[in-house]
Amino acid sequence: MRELNFPFDGKDIIRRRLALRKQLLADGCVRVKKRIAVLGGSTTNHIVSALELFLLNFGIEPEFYLSEYNKFYEDAVFGNPELDSFDPDVIYIHTTSRNLTMLPESPAETAETVEQKLNDQFAYFKQVWDSLKQHFSCPVIQNNFELPLFRRTGSYDGWSTAGHAAFIQRMNVMLSDYARSTRGLYIHDINYLSAVCGLANWHDAEAWYLYKYAMSTNVIPDLAYSLACIIKSIYGKNHKVIDLDLDNTLWGGVIGDDGQEGIEIGQETAIGQAFSEFQSFIKGYKDYGVLLAVCSKNDEENALLGLNHPCGVLKSTDFVSIKTNWEPKDRNIAETAADLSLGLDSFVFIDDNPAECAIIEGQLPMVQTINLSTVHEAMYKLTRSGFFEVTAVSDDDMHRSEMYAANAQRAAQLRSFESYEDYLLSLDMHAVICGFEPVYIQRITQLTNKSNQFNLTTRRYNEDEIQKVSTSPDHICICGRLLDKFGDNGIVSVVIGKCRDKELDIELWLMSCRVLKRDMELAMLDELVRRAKDKGITRINGFYYKTHKNSMVAELYGSFGFTLDKKLDNGDSEWHLDIEGYENKNKVIKIRDKENPE
Image (cartoon, rainbow, N blue to C red; front, side, top):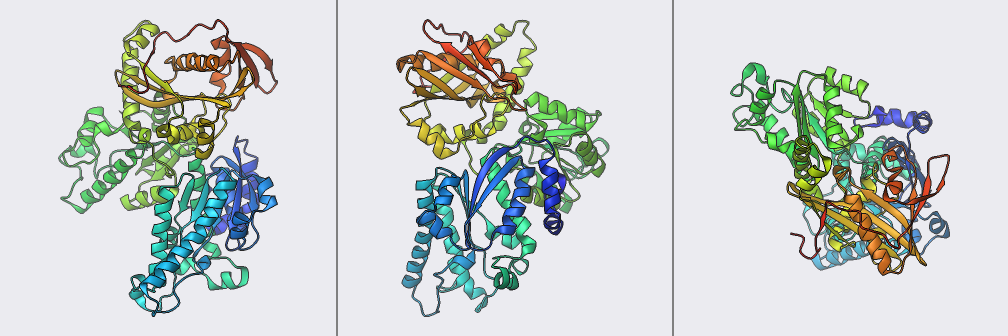
């Protein structure tokens, strides 16, 4: 529902909340269900109402627990049977500067006194987080703190020993430092949000005194949307590709008319500087694992001249796909999605032509569009949209573009072989298959929340849960990293099995779509069987739970030689494999020692 994407009309969303909710729930979309506990230091009803709409629009159907007013500390530290039985998947602590109880009271307070208050205030919140992490193995989202609207001493309040703004800023740094070193704790940056909305619009004394809302009701949709972006990022609902037009989008002018020397990019003109800043901004996304692509009505020769302009920041090698022709752009985007083995809901399209954006919205409604009327407006929309909200950065993220570029090379090589087996052998593939090593935990968690097509049960795990099963004596956990002559694909497959006497129940089996049809699943099966035999397991049970995206693996167990035990009308099925006498099935991938993967 595009009216729930940024920029949105917050007042209209609140006014039409019930109708929008009814429309979303009736749209036939299959959503993942999550239980979200909201522990509030102020009134949270309107926040939850708006949050529900944004989460539904992001493909998450939430169920909520709300603490009583300002009982976040009591619920977290002393426990609450109702919260225990709710068993949340996510906990959101909605506190604001109104909940800072140890602010300096006098300019006469010494630096030592203020430092002690700062440490005591931080310890208060740390006790909340630690208690919640001890009771619940789930992500915790904590607001940082917005600045006050009123300052008795002007700018001095921001840097003096006893200044409230100075205290709040130091507290925010402490929160950030702690979150970076604490698995499963995420900071919701309302300090930025209140600044971008404007402190005068954020603070509303009447809303506080009458209803105990810690911010104006006008900005509640902004807060709820920002929070929803963090939650959908935790559960792998981010977009993956920025697909860009060229002329008057990545540079000023039309390359076909003006030539390489005539387009505006670089420091010589104001327009050129603006597009250079935009290119730098876009290139920064690549470092976080976002794929960049080009979709432009242009001759290829001209497009490459523009992309390799000596003053340009983005070069042709920064893009995993470049489609420059005179075909309809919706067709080119669809082909790019197929080439990358990604869904259309992974794409964000940016074009200076509003008509082209409208065509994409009509023909490919799952693709998000940004009309670039000005460079800074497009950057602002990308910033606030949350399409690429980051909650963790793995080593694979930082090399994702290179991995997809290597995939394009593999696809090109495939076309030169008549035999698919010969093609696989030509790749010189090597796999490193091991347990859930600490260095891989973050990537494994990402895969469990992102992979949908090759995912037999679509169970989702948070980082704490992956850590727990990785050391469980009752589980067999393996992950696979695939390398070939074109590069390292990173961790691409995950299997989790639960031991039950002499049987192993496969709770999760997934693989990244970028290594489909490479026989990695056979190598993983061989290793799973080997580890099962070592534990005295004689039978492996496999489960397929049908979703609207994973039909490609409906018969996977059958292809492995499993026996079908049960098939339900809804498409779910159960299988088993007696592993006595099992013979390895992988013929093309060499297995490397994890200690010496190179």
